[in-house]
Image 1 (cartoon, rainbow over the protein chains, first blue to last red):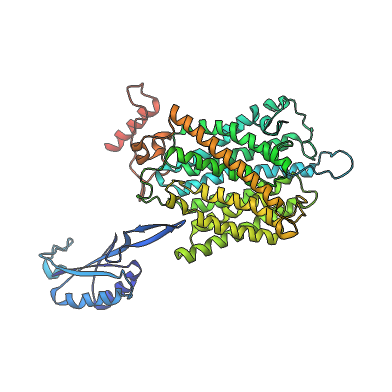
Image 2 (image 1 turned 120 degrees about the vertical axis):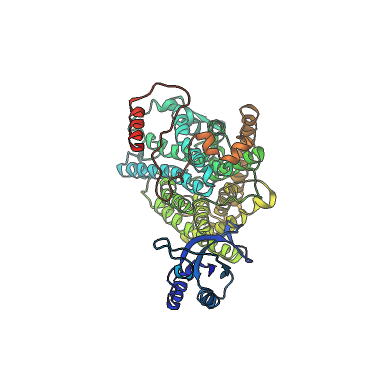
Length: 112
Length: 457
């Protein structure tokens, strides 16, 4: 199993959700996040005085998937999240040792 | 203040229309001080919002009391040597008949006194914007008391009082460019040079915490300013008040636009703070000039003032003085611009016969305006710096550095502007002890405890 984590622009959430559903993903977790990448946030101007605001709003999407689907799903998310502008975000995967469905006690791939 | 309106050969009679108009104008001007409080309050950080509001509000208390006791007498009593006034009949606002008219006008003395009181209140409040985050509230209250007495009341007499030297010289200051805005702006500069910068000035971000509050405050100022300006003719028998009303709107609009255009070209965005600041700059600039220029002149005066003030607010970073909310940049610069532009744009109609350079006049009026500007600027700057120095050497002007960093609201007012603890769904009921130490249990607190016990069970 793999955990796919994507930190992306908030307004792409709907597109990503739809793309994941079309692929057949059953569930996902979404959290509000803030942070910055290479672009280092943005600048605000108050009466000519400029302030750099480092942490910009993002959303973090987590999806648990089977190993075989992981690579393809990363592509699906990247395609849905991309606007081509700076600050589009990042997607990465991690190996997962185990997963349990709380209601039934199913383990491993059955719990995904 | 303009010379008396004499409508008929006979002495003026009380006009119900003018009296009603002036009472409404006075109420409008009163609203400007809370408006200013919000304009300033939104521009500071969360931790000093209440202090900023209170510095304006306290002026409503202190100056009103002073005005009754001796302020009106010092500003608008009988002239003594062109520098100060006094009239024992005005002390305590006593010995004034209900229908006794202000000399040469159609409104009662009481109406004039209450209208002028509102000007006296807002002027010290204007200064407070330069002192954000760092001044002891007692020191501020003392400063307001002394400043109103030693600076505002005499300067109001110079500019508007019969016999005052600027008034007699022919300096045009319709509604207070010199007496209010240059006076407050120069005072702000004098005080901040004495008390110094905020901790973290030019290093820490000091972004405005609520631009909606700033916009609300600017809107209230704009609204109240119609009373400030249009009321300054003390009646509207001949249309000058209406001209002033129109010019107020025109100049403010032009200044807002010119500030925004400058900002877009220079910094890349049309900001909310820029719109609010530009509007205030326009209001300031039209205050001295609006009774003597045409609407097209008002357009030019507003546009010039918006541009100049937008450029001036950056000066504090260049020269390193911490004019926190740009009182110097907006009120002093805007006031000087408006007062001097009278010398160019006065049409010879309206408030005064004097013509500016652009309307067939010469440089005479500009020279008079410059004399008024220079004298008020120098006197207010010096006197305010000395007052601040005196207070600093006695009770101290500033709060401690740790108190400033921690937040002046908490230390000076035992309050905070916003409660964020309940954000996202409220908090559980808690019993708190308001006063430390042992005390008799009140019925209410024991009831609360019982209730808590029940919940626990």
